[in-house]
Length: 73
Image 1: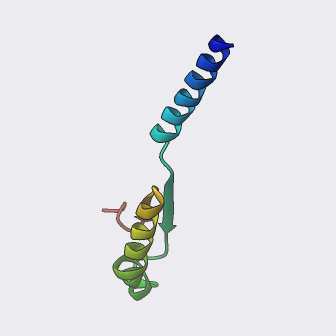
Image 2: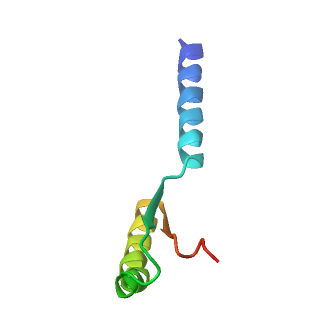
């Protein structure tokens, strides 16, 4: 009986460690032409993404905004 309890406890610890290592990431991709939606994209960066980042952090998640215009140089 004692052995079964120890094995069960070890499985629970292993599962807990796995969940701590596995972090949830929320990614939002924004794409349009260079000139289209410039004001909207800027508003997303200045307001919405900031609020989403704060919310995600409170939930234990990571927030990543990916604006595809950054990837083109």
